[in-house]
Length: 318
Image 1 (cartoon, rainbow, N blue to C red):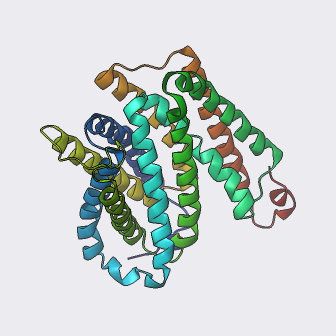
Image 2 (image 1 turned 135 degrees about the horizontal axis):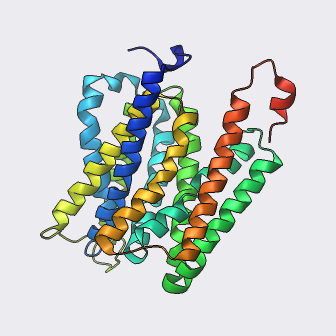
Image 3 (image 1 turned 45 degrees about the horizontal axis):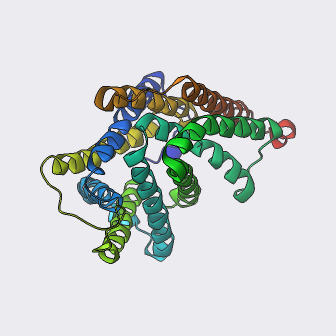
């Protein structure tokens, strides 16, 4: 298996393939949330999240076995993986809980402050150079999120802040993954994430049994709920596989802007399934978040493309 680091450039056909796969990924991803919203009506958020992790791990297992990725497991990093599993569990439960009370498109739009949080965290914890222009873009993006949160807060209360908590967790998860991804196989990492996430969900459900909590008290799924849970896991695994192969075919900086199309596809699915459609103020917030995200990506691509010898401006790049 050739290392991706040995490939300095991608051919035009590979980039086209990568773009197509990423487009499929962002079109499939909102279905995870649609199925979750349908399931969380009758079963707790932790159970929906556990089903997602279980099915994802089962989907990854044949690939991990075929690629012999078990040999790439860093058992010495088990604590690191456990922390990642705990963080992703909190993120998923928070977001699934949000879907019980909020429209899918609104929740996803608020969640898309995550790339902005990653930019800020990268500057703070990884000492990446972030100038005033990108920090300003982050501030503008948060303003856009507030435009969506404010009317949602009036409707559902503090639940409207859960997508922000989810985004904060994912941003932390992404930074930890950046550190570990240089040493481990991505498929093995995905599999371990699913196993640890499932373990933490099982613990929460065990202690939540009998409490009456709509987050933690497990119930036996009935009727169509089995289909919804299967849909959550299957679409999550499918979107993840599309994403992995997209990033193998094309540079991340080329694919990143396509992620914002998830807001568009989420709006379409939410309208078709639930009849939800953002109002004018929420659309303004969505557009602001997307514009700030595109600007941050543009700045990163611009300075990432500079020659290594061009250190004077790259060091100060905002």
